[in-house]
Figure (cartoon, rainbow, N blue to C red):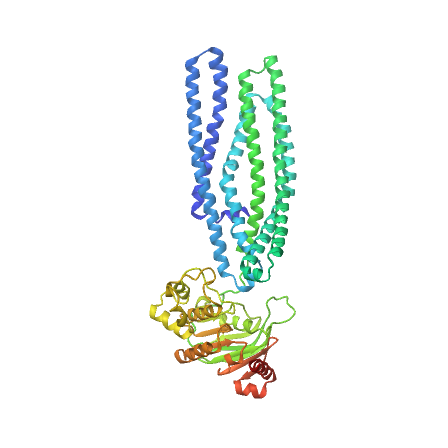
Length: 575
């Protein structure tokens, strides 16, 4: 796990090396200070040699200054390493998310994906930035200080042989119990983010139904859960400090007791005991550092596992069969296509679909809610892959097209229209970043968006706000249609994308598409018969199966399902 995480250090590897070298050198300089201090006491003070005291004092000051500057350098390098690997991990996660199909996204909650890119990465980068110093310093200080302590007085240093196993046992018990608590804590953060995301996304619905109090109760529940999980984890982790202090003070008292008796017997000098205690404190501090590193590492491993789950997610839509080809005409054919969202699902969403759409045709798709109309068209640009059968464009299986070229040739205007923060022009340029002003205006004319853009305060430079809050639902639909047209696609899919506009505007859009874009294949999903009655052919779907194909007149004469839809809408119009 750690090797996998550190493999994303990239160009920041050198900062890890520089930080480690600075920390090691700093530790060695600090280890010299107690030796010099003991020498000053035992030689300079005892003999009264002031010159010797000042000379050794100067060496101590030089060692302290060197340690200071090395400490500053190590802090800067460790911060650069931690922030750098954090940035690389977020970039790698985001790049992987861009490869996700809809099915891959369905494996995770959106709130969890956000947490894994923010909180989990922050845990790792903070562990590196704040943990490199104790991680390098602790072992160096422990080994060196222990060696010096044994060289000063072996008999007194035996106390450590009792203290170290005791401390190691306490640390092992704490880590084994706290690790699962950290994983639960990150899961609790997911739940908090999910509630916040849902509430902000559906804020208008919450206000309209006066459900603010209910949402507050929901949030308080998950927030309390996060508080509880965090308290349990950190309370257990903090027992490490209590265990460390117990061992530390017990060790110091033991050394003072035995050391004092040795001074009384003349087997040890006061300067030796003073220096020995300095190294004891450094040893115990290094042990505290190491124990804290283990706790930080435990939390980082919990976060690292969640990050690696994203990085290791197997992309179900692959380009193994892709060839260097492009969509030329836009002819679409389904041959005995079956589809279900998950392999283990018992029922198919689409069953034995056979449909041939010639290039340049306009095809309407109608059916009751839940008849899998949207699912059918999402198979064309491989937003999902078919379970069995063949789906061909221009007579070539879709799997043989590179995904970029395939999706560049297909434009979809989905049921849920999405605009991004920025200007209207910036949103339109998603269709073609190099589109000229003339091309933008032409696309907006065909989509019927020109009639309201002229009334906007800054025209095409008007800010849309987050999610396009500055325009109505119908205006948003027309902007999205214009954006799709700027792609100059071979296949245009309109998924109920004129539901929020009036019939007259819809008619103008349909006539504009037919007149200006006669060679483009157009697939229109609609709830209203009036939206598709002029199509070259209309497909009737029911429960994921094709129940009829024909023109409006043919289906009205022969297809019962189509007749029922038509009659229900006619009755509604009469009312």
